[in-house]
Amino acid sequence: MKENWIQSFIKSAGAILLVSALARFLIAAGNAPFLFLPDSLLGIPLRYALLAIGGIELFVALVCLFGKYAGIQSAWLAWLATNYVVFQTGLFWMHCHPQATCIGSLTDPLHLSRGITGSVLAFVPVYLVLGSYTAWIWFWLENRRMETAEYFKMSCPSCGIHLRFDTRNLGQEISCPHCHAYITLRKPENLKMACFFCREHIEFPSHAIGQRIPCPHCEKIITLTPLQNV
Image (cartoon, rainbow, N blue to C red; front, side, top):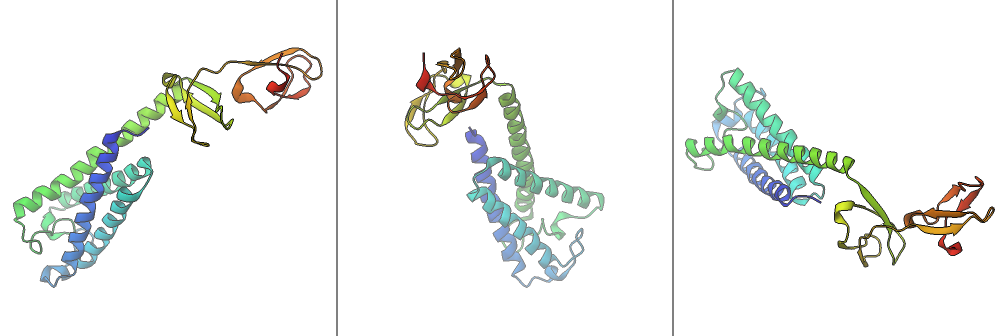
């Protein structure tokens, strides 16, 4: 079950990236002289650099806003945030000012002060890095917890589908993922049957109904079924 904060972060990051992408497209559509200058780090005209970065941001924004899998969405955000950091590090290493690059030219076309623009541009990568990597750590810890958790198995009383659930959810009422009937998660009780060949008694959990196994007594293959309960 996904945490609400992860979903909130993903949606907010998607909205921020959507606004950022549209702003870059707006700038690239202008006729400012600096658009024909090469980007300080990428080396291509700033107009094309803006279109490329805006296109990537738009793609990740759509994944965040309309995707269904939080793990994949967080992965794309972490990838984009990492590239932001690498880009900024490269600019710092080359002693370039971000304002002359595709990630720092939002001032003139939007009529924002350089202080506001710089603060926003500096905040977005930090927000994406902290949020996406925190989400990934949470997913990793949750997977570790699931690997060490104990589970019960039971069959849905309505359709017979096998269900697997954490022991901590014992007693909860859920909707069956197959037939959507409401069922209460209970600890499974063993069923009994007699082997068709040797007539010895066999116990098995309800989720094993229908399985073919060797009889533990005569080792002949039998089908586990409650129709021969004893």
